[in-house]
Amino acid sequence: MTGDGSYHHGNLRAALLERAEAVLTASGAEGLSLRGLARDLGVSHAAPSRHFRDRQALLDALAVSGFTTLNARLRSAAAGGADGADGADGVDETAGAAGPVGARLAGLGRAYVDFAVGHTALLDLMFTVKHADDSSAELRELGHESLLIVARLMEEGQRTGAVRPGDPVQLAQVAFSTVHGLATLAVAALLDDTPLSEAMELALEVLLAGLRPGR
Amino acid sequence: MTGDGSYHHGNLRAALLERAEAVLTASGAEGLSLRGLARDLGVSHAAPSRHFRDRQALLDALAVSGFTTLNARLRSAAAGGADGADGADGVDETAGAAGPVGARLAGLGRAYVDFAVGHTALLDLMFTVKHADDSSAELRELGHESLLIVARLMEEGQRTGAVRPGDPVQLAQVAFSTVHGLATLAVAALLDDTPLSEAMELALEVLLAGLRPGR
DNA sequence: ACCTGAACACCGTTCAAGT
DNA sequence: ACCTGAACACCGTTCAAGT
Image (cartoon, each protein chain N blue to C red):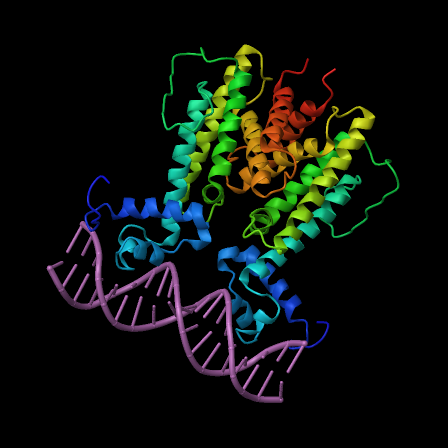
């Protein structure tokens, strides 16, 4: 309780985003209405329009925030951190003293899937491009950042001989696709008996085998 | 022009679905309203409720129809057909006289990506499970069918030595993930300079290499 | 059986007006 | 600058009533 419950000061925007994220995870994007948020925050139904041009702008802001936290987790995993979901941001740039590339790639994959299954509706917003306007340019930029985190690891793997030659960005696209696709299958309940962790381990094994130099 | 333009006979359901699919590809799911469809078809706004319990039921029906045509294309590709989009359903069960497994797996992947980029909004409906009711059970069933088509090819690959040992269904999940994920990246405009076909070929190469028996 | 019309309770968005 | 209240044009859904 850092203050009183009064908005009308400039924190309405932040309050809207916070409440919106809660509603999103609870009820999905369909259940998210500007009027509902305003009601929840005890403010007039027209107030949100001061902070978000329209409903899509709110959704875009949520997606941007989602990508920001996803990328933080990916960076942490790429640096060799455990794939736990603690909020710490220990990025640790001190060179490649963080275990073999394969293991960190695996950690990256697990971190991604953790985030994905924990934020189903948010991930949907992040990857469903709506009306290619300016704010979705920011979204694309953040998506590229995700891919770059993977690409840098590919480059390192190429130096250590764990990864085949080729454009690291394209190799990263392949790795990203595999992991993102697996998360999609899991969320769509298409994995059935296969536990997600087991499917994930097999996917990582196949992926890493396929990425290895072909002699 | 197979008849007159009169509904009110029992073909309203089919007409709704047809029009809905057109609106879906033109404007996405957000732009799809029951009242709008009724207006387009010259029928009262309450008429659709006779054929679809609610809006979600219409969306589910669209997803079911999407999976049905996707699976037909996948079956055709798995049988060795070209990945062209002709409507023919030549399944051809006459044994494995349809080229090497790797090539057909690649054809399967291309057919999938073709469908995905050609039916963006539909694919979204197909893989975004809403409120786990009975009709989404049918959706899951159809998704399993997609995976089974891939799994059967994996099994064949195992017999011919092109694919490593292991549960064919799990291997199919990995392959499916890769291709589905790549389609997602393409649709989200995250592939950039990389042409989709090029990204696809690399993904298939990495995937097939990873699937090969170890040594 | 199938559709209509009215009704109800929601929406997003805009805009004058208040403080 | 920030919010309110009213207004407008949409929704989905339900239900008596028509044919």
